[in-house]
Amino acid sequence: MNPGIYTLTVRASFSAAHRLREYDGNCERLHGHNWQVEVSVASEQLDDRGIALDFRAIKAAVNELLSGFDHRYLNEVPPFDRQNPSSENVARYLFEEMERKVPAPARVARVTVWESEDARADYSRPD
Image 1 (cartoon, one colour):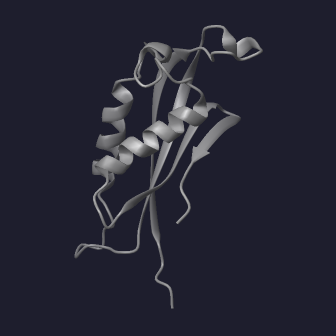
Image 2 (spheres, rainbow, N blue to C red):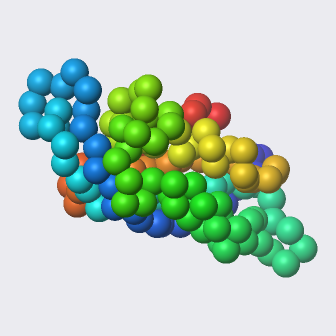
């Protein structure tokens, strides 16, 4: 029998401007978003307290990452000074950075970046 998987999700936000390079449309011009970010962490195990990973630790890691983006022009913030700051690339970047911060046996399961109420990008890796 396969063990179950616990998934913890936290949400945070930041405000930033960007422009999409080589995009044929309005988004090539400078514009801003109130971005919403959801980070989901998965674990098959709980500690002695019955906790997979403290929500506070996940939130602190997410907020630390997002503080470098808040009220900034993303096209000037590494790695987006070289890479297009699309929602997809932001989601992948946050996923990879969170992987460095989440201790085993937990793992980052998914990062979702909402650039508006009805437009989001998800990034995850196959199990």
